[in-house]
Every structure is written in structure tokens, then in C-alpha cells.
Image (cartoon, rainbow, N blue to C red; front, side):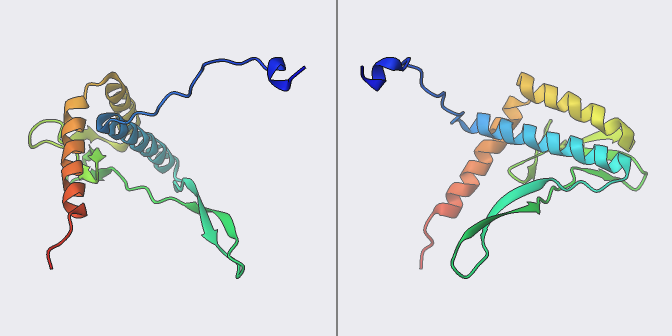
Length: 154
């Protein structure tokens, strides 16, 4: 009896990941908002937020790659104005995401209200409410990256 006849075969195939720019940008924004939520929680508790990241570095003389855990830098998305009001800015492609023309900041009030606002933003992104703004920002990022890839004239 052959080994293949003992196995249960199927026609299943792995699902492809989102290959559209909007899906990638939405996923990145959701990850950024989750990081911001964790960072503000740590800040309210009085501790430092340092999420780990695994890096493969060459350590020894023989060229062996050794995996090392380092702290990942997360950019804080909130700030206080001179009056003491806390504001939050979402970023897509390193640039502020304009929720309305000319308005990128969300006025929160105090820092303890920020986690609830971040949960609401995560829900809005998952529901697709910010898709037009994300799509526009992702397209602008794609154009900027295309300009960078162009060969420079000598």
C-alpha cells in the first residue's frame, strides 16, 4: 500500500493576503492605533512602553546570524496645546491623515479620555468609515515612492 493512499488529500489553498494599497494601509493604521492604545495605557499607569521586535544580526566572526530582541520605537500620536488640551493625530505614510479638509487633529480634552477615542477610531477604521481618507493618503504615498524610484538625471 502506498503512503499517498493513506493520506487524506484536499484541494484547499492558502488565502492570499490583501494586495490592494487600501487594505495594506488600513492594516497598518489599525496596528498603529493598537500601539497608540497600548502606549497611552502605559503612560496612564506611569510605565514606559517599549514593544519588542526580533532582529537577525550577525554577531560572531563566523557570520552566524543571531536573533536578538530589541525595543521598537513608537512615535507618540498625541500632544498637548498651550491650553493643556490633548489632541490626537493619526498618520498614514508618515503624514497626518486629514479627517476633513484642513483638519487632521482630534481634540480629546484630557489624556484619560484618549483610550476610549482610540477604541472608537479602531472601530471606525474596521467599519470602513475612513476608507476615502486612507485611500487618498495611500495613493499620495505611492506617488511619492514612485518619484523616489525614478532614476536621477546626471
